[in-house]
Amino acid sequence: MSDKVLISPSILSADFAALGQAVRDIDAAGADMIHIDVMDGHYVPNLTIGPDVVKALRPHSEKPFDVHLMISPTEILVPLFIAAGADYITVHPDAGPHLHRTLQSIRAAGVKSGIVLNPGAPVEQLDPVIDLCDQVMIMSVNPGFGGQSFIPSQLDKIRAVRAKIDAFKAAGGHDILLQVDGGVNPTTARDCIAAGATSLVAGSAVFKGAGTYAENIAALRGDALTKAA
Ligand code: DX5
Ligand code: ZN
Image (cartoon, rainbow, N blue to C red; front, side):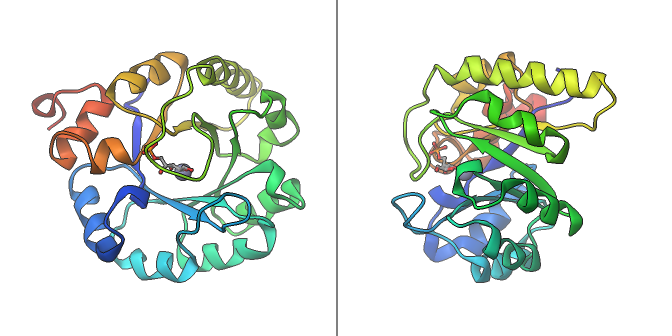
């Protein structure tokens, strides 16, 4: 691990009646990105945020918007999230219909692209599209809800993806963030970082953790706040 791990708080755990304030607060508390969970009630059994909300939040922070699309089909709605101001768009390979073209279109718009591997998905899903990914996300819970428990078997998948990214880079490829999403708290964060993660999503641990947002973010990095400040 070279650099400090990135923290991308998920506003899924924020007060939905005050999302603008939540984004400003986690920005000020040291978030590296803002994680926005988009759910359609079809690909996952929950409904959350659409492109108009992303657009409305855009003026509240200059930090990258890390938009996690849990919608099927994915491809037809991607342009709306690009127009709304997404900096990263991460998609589920099985949400379809054409993963390769979806990733191409995200990158062609100058936006960072990523794929998400669900807990039941094989690591090989990455192989045909690694050259089109700026980020690979490992889901350490099944997608749809915040507040679930970390699935420990996903640590092996993080290690396997770490090896694939390192091999890709050693062969001259670009850098790729390795992100973990779901059940990340200060304890599981340590395991994820040791396994090779470079970016951590956390909803409950930031918004409902024991300390201030800044303390909760620092704890995920493995820093005491005084050391991080
Ligand atoms: C779940 C979402 C996660 C969720 C994480 O489908 O993708 O981003 O907000 O929430 P916690 O950190 O509470 O597990
Ligand atoms: Zn997410």
